[in-house]
Amino acid sequence: MAGKKLSFEQSLSRLDEIVRHLEKGDMPLSESLALYEEGAGLIKRCSEMLDEAEQKVVKLKKGPDREPIELPFEDESQNDS
Amino acid sequence: MERQSLSVSELNNLIKGLLEQEPKLSNVCVRGELSNYKIYPSGHHYFTLKDSESSLRCVMFKSSAVKLRFRPENGMGVTVYGRVAVYPRDGAYQLYCSAIMPEGAGDLQIAFEQLKAQLASEGLFERSHKKSLPQFPKRIAIITSSAGAAVHDMIRILGRRWPMAQVVLLPVRVQGAEAPPEIAGALRYANEFKVADVIITGRGGGSMEDLWAFNDERVARAIYASELPVISAVGHEPDVTIADYVADARASTPSNAAEIAVPDWHEILDSINSYEIRADQAMRKKLLSLSEKLEALKNKRVITDPSAHIDNRRIELDHARDRLTAAEERKLSRCRQNFLALTSALDAMSPLRVLTRGYAIAEKEDGSTVKSVEMLSAGDSLSLQLWDGKADCLVSSVSKRSIK
Image (cartoon, each protein chain N blue to C red):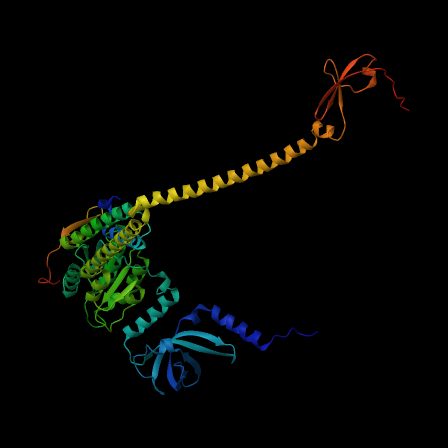
């Protein structure tokens, strides 16, 4: 499987699928091992994504053609409107 | 000519149908005084609403009655919201109440109840219209004031729980006359440019007037029209706005909205870890069962003692050979018996045995056996074979027996 392309959600659901397959245990060892390896890769990747995630906050502004422009969001709690 | 008659129930159902067709009666708001107020064990409330000249039978079912924020009493001046319909069993029309406001309730409260009843009758609060929230949102739009505690609480909690999601703030005013069109506009804009996969809109707590933008019909309709799921997050726990009724999910506070919008990464990490454990266990089980199978195979005799296998084959071969020999011998003895029977039969037919009984064979000089007198003439020499020797003879005469 192209593990690198999956989103977090897809990775988790693939992981769920893999674990269910493994738990059924009705396939040849070579397939089990391949699945196990794929699962281990997904686990590693998902954990890394969680560990390394850093929240990004932007403020949207309408551009000249109404298109959204992302601006950094600064703390405006001091200058209340 | 007799007139076609109707049964009582037919007439009552006819009237019921007529009343229920009238849109004005499906959403009414009536002022009057409560009398004869009774709460039944079923939880339904029955009462009469009256003024100086007239009275109206009313019922409020348990589902609506539990939402009453005051205790209705006889003599109390109230405004009642609901629909008029016929109860066919009694042939009486009555008001089915959804809400009762005590007299003196503010205009805002009345406007709220009116809009709520109106939108409910249009189906804006239907559960079937509510969209489910994404499990792992990638972008979360927040439509609220960029100042104030609410936005910061939400950003902080979103960041703590699920930092993978980007937060997209669409700043709007949340109170004052400009607030409703700005909120509604931001909702439409977020949908038009698909700026996120879930929207939170709301504000921190305040008075009913402060929260009023979220009781605005324009905001309610924009939430209803949103294709992106909307979480409403207005004020504190007890505050309920029209936006809360229309939204796909209602949060009691802005912080609570952040909790509803995203999962907690600790929990997700736990579940990833549990997948890891399950995968390991499954793999271990698989390997264990394979090694058990291998062990069972190893214990088979053909593997543990291959020569025994060959010995067994050898014994089988010997047995087969024995069976074969025995069969051959049986066949041979059968042949021998046949032979004896044949030779004794042959012996019985031997001419020598006939000669012993006194017969003789006459042979001519050329060795041919004489079978008829016609083969003989007087003067021929014959040899007579007897069982124990022969005698040479001379034919003196030949006479043929006449055979008739």
